[in-house]
Image (cartoon, rainbow, N blue to C red; front, side, top):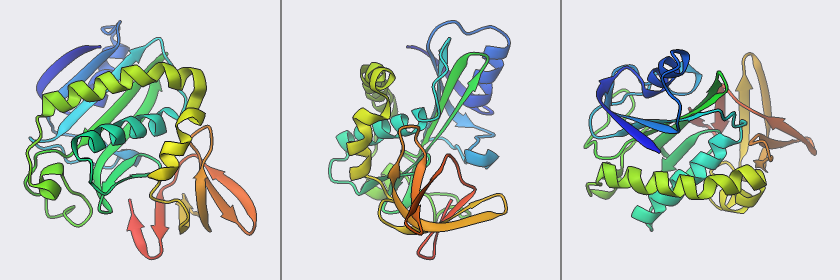
Length: 239
């Protein structure tokens, strides 16, 4: 994939959309920024993107991945994190986060636009501290390991792994990867409440569907959710 570096941009996802809308992107491309001034997380929440993190977006023209690509991407990212930190307590939290010791380490944001797929990833790597407003919820690789990580090397290995396994995902779907996901599924087996708009459901998380939906067991019946506004786990707030 072609890689384009930015010292600063508002958001690599927004830049990807601008390039697609102006017909300036024709090949699989990765947009990487040292700093994002308006990083975007899920549900349009702010993603603080200071120097020291890895902020990038993969753009795939003439592809329209389905919603399960977020889960696939989280699995690939988790694998590479374990490659660098084999003993780390890293978990995948539906729908789009990687956690280290229950704190948010990375987030993934996927969308489709004009027959192109956009996969944005934000990963806290070498920040020595988190901003006060999120330091109880988020962490970085450096904070947890006291080790610096070479960002470009990490990105290179991650992109290679993504490309190596993408065709398997396109051919087999999530089915091929579900056993891996289950092993590191942060929600699996937990009693949770899930909020979507003004509606709320309580149940036990029992895995994900082939479409990447969260499956809850509610009163001995299964209900699937493609997204959520808020998830509570035994009194613990998960954003």
